Length: 283
Ligand SMILES: C[S@@+](CC[C@H](N)C(=O)[O-])C[C@H]1O[C@@H](n2cnc3c(N)ncnc32)[C@H](O)[C@@H]1O
Image (tube, protein in one colour):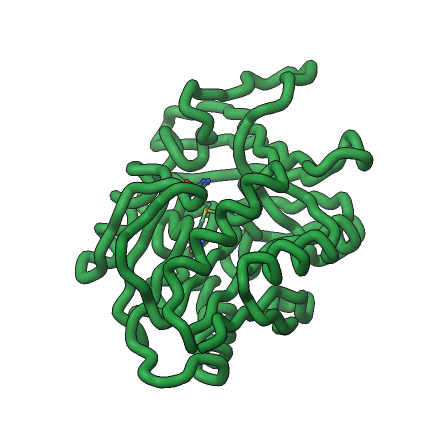
């Protein structure tokens, strides 16, 4: 997840705008004063028991700019008709909230808790629990979005499987967008401050993205959350692991799946643009 700019998040960037978050806790825990929250099925606290706080940590309104960028890119790339959109790893549906004005949207995510938030926000959309590496819906879409959830892919095999899923769900003449947060070449360590309140809930926190082993294919984002509900306050450390692959690996896997890939400049708040992949499935 790229923590969005705007109201809820006061950014304190050390080096670059490329803040990411990510995902599964597969690494050994390191010494930390805070409790490390982990759960058996591999998802993180943020997408499980902390879901009621999610809209404070990543406000839906902050996705408007990038959703508009994706809409325009699909309009350019897809041979009409352009009606249906599949969001792989759709989470709480914060991109779909904006995209559903233009597309008939289907959301897939491995977390039922996140999808239930999206059902509240996007009741008119179809929601399906599934893993983007293995899900087979048995139908194709005009457009497929694999947003920051693609960063959960922490092995090349996992990334290839997710790319294949996207390809198999795009019709010929359609397009997919892979909105990754960083490649091995663009990743930089950084911190981002979180400060948000709404409806009696308050969050103060810090996200710290860092790479303890530049030789491997992952980096960490450690979150320290102080969560206040009325007068009750708890502190949670949530560790996410994200895949980090060279751009050449991305392009090789996209080509192997059958995509024709071009770069797409995506707005990232007041920090400018980064680069994601716009991929056409040939006729
Ligand atoms: C940052 S959230 C996505 C937010 C979403 N892009 C939005 O617009 O609100 C990351 C999501 O990836 C999901 N995820 C992680 N691994 C996944 C997988 N293998 N298949 C499907 N979803 C996955 C998590 O459950 C989580 O909801």
